[in-house]
Structure formats: C-alpha cells, structure tokens
Length: 337
Image 1 (cartoon, rainbow, N blue to C red):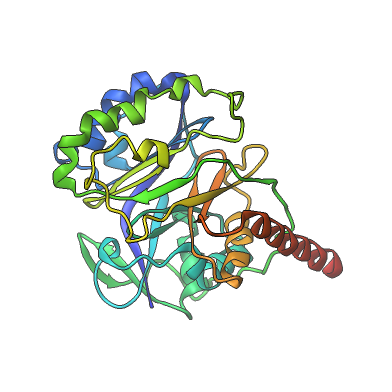
Image 2 (cartoon, rainbow, N blue to C red):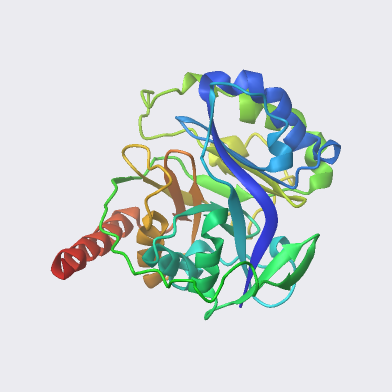
C-alpha cells in the first residue's frame, strides 16, 4: 500500500460558539465560494462545545483575528493511505479500523500524536510537520511513501531523515478516557458539488443558525442527544456527517446514501478536553474495533474525539470491549514498570 503525504500545510483551530458570527463570512466563502479562494483543504465540525476548523494556510487567511479563536500550536500535515493507484480523495474508503494496526498503533507506540479526520471518501491522518521524519521512519517498512507536490506524487524517501536519525523508543499508552454514546443516530454522506448551490441556504442554516448557540452546554431536554455536524470540502470532494433529523431536512436524491441507508452510532471519547500532546487515544479506540472487525469513522475535534460505528453494532458490547482493551494496556504497563 501507499502512504501519501499531502502538500497542504494545515491549521487546527477552535472557534467558540459566541465567536461564530464574526467568522461566518469567511467560513461561508470557504464552504460555498471555494473557487474564489486558494483553499484546497477545509473542514468545519460543530460539537456542543465549539466549532473545530481544519484548514490550509490559504484558507486560514479568510478568518479574522479574534480572542474567540484558539489555534493549536503546530503546523499539521495530512497523510492518506491509498490501496493501489489513484489520488487520495478518489480512492475507495479504507476506514480507520483498517489502518489501526498498520498506521495508528505504530505511530502511538513511537510517541507520535495524531489528529484524525474521516470523511465520506477517505481517512486523513494529521501529524505535526515536525514529526514527519519520525513518521516516515516508523512507517517506511510497511508502506511505499509518496509526497504530493503540485498535484503530482513523487517518492518521499528524502525529506531530511539523516543517517544520524535516532530510532524512537516504544512508549506505553496507559491513559484511559471516559466513553459515552449519545442517543442520536448519524449519517455519513456526500453530495455532488454541482448541487451545492441548490442547498446552500439550507446548509448555511444548519452550519451557523440551527440552534448551535443554544447548545453551549449539555443541559437539554434530552441530555444524551448532542449537536454534531461536520462539513468538509477537500480537493473538490464534499463530506457531510449529521444526525438523521438534520439529514431529513434535505431534498430527496441530493445526499449520497448507501443502498441500505445505513445509520451510525457515536462513541464520544473524553470527559475533559483531550489536548494535542497525548499519544495513543485514536489507537486505544481503533485497535479493539479492528480486532472485532468493526468498520468505523473517526473524527477528532479540538476538545474531544468521536468514533462512528454502524447502527447494528451493539454499543453496550463495544464499549466494554474497548474498556477491557484499555485495562489490558494498563496492566501491561504496570507489569513492565
């Protein structure tokens, strides 16, 4: 398999709920008038806490400076696993569980933090730019490493990794974060970019005006029902993640759906904001899912992580399996200590 290192230099930022109004103009331009910008990688995800934006440096210029915007202290690069030829976004989805043991776990074992973005089309693994030599060293035996330069893929065997490179030590991953599962079901879908103008008004309402400001906390009539909406426009491909009630607002035949019209359940990771420095959070969720052969999407946000598993998956069985896996990690760590 090939591991593509995409050419986008990315920023990860959080927009506070009360700050969304000052950012709406720039965000609308990135989402609906992309041809008027030089942005090629844009993703916006709303959670009960905030809005997380992942955007390339050109797109970041469209946002105002504000104390209500927090930016992660790093430049990030997007990696994409591709089976066979073709560019990253047009390849078949692989699923985070399919790359759990070949990509996610090795990076965690070598103390490399990742930020995940699953889309309808594929899965992007974001790593800090300064970690790239270590990433390549860790994954070079498993993958053909290629870098995308001006839209063309070239060999990535010479990116500053010298003969003096020190092999990183394996590190334990013993930290356990609380898991929860909201009651609403979700759709992972897309639409033809040519139809975007016809639903732009609806999308604007969903993204910026549909009660997001009312959900600053989790105190609602149904505390297990959360606000979650994700829009990504990456290299011309649109991906949407929304709950089924929101999806029902769209006209028939606009959204792409699977033949079964499958819905997805969410597992939310974290009781307090996770931060960006801890390694192994994605691995601790994706590895037990991979072992059980359960497909999953995974979306990291500025404060928490979110895994999506098929509706027919028994969450009451899956969460204990994940917890058991984490307990075994802790036990192994304590034994080695």
